[in-house]
Length: 124
Length: 109
Image (cartoon, rainbow over all chains, first blue to last red; front, side, top):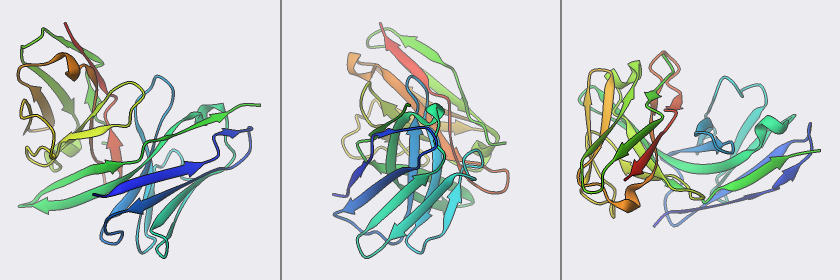
């Protein structure tokens, strides 16, 4: 049973850098993409970006200039850094495992395992 | 297009059937996945692929797709199904980035 355990600083001041890490336990790390998603208070889910075991990344264009996602395959961990945070970055941040493929010209994509979430508050 | 559109709120009487929809151009080539989120909890995958349920998800949850619209159907809604539901797919505009719908708040009356 794959489990994701995430951690990181929960209180930041404006202009600081958010830093979170997600560790993967009980399953394969390679062969998947790994995502970060966030949810501002009272709002919906927003995909931040993803990385695979080789370090290949994709980012949400709206956050791309401030986001870095990295991987440490020796520890089965991946990390999120978001620079120059403001109050608008206050949210619960989740890590998740992605599954993707294709069946007869139709693609499938889903996130089947999620971390419990980390609440990050940006306040002066 | 990078957008997935959901109705903000839907209600259903206890024991009745409800359909939650998700519209987007990418759904012409991607199956949507669906997530249930209850207050204070992480999202939980309830439907993926053409119409697949992860282990532990009741069979009253089902999925379907037609054209640019994906649907999540709950047949015989229970009180515990009251939650926010999100659809998810990849953007088909070229970069194939992940995208979520805005979410649907389901109220079971």
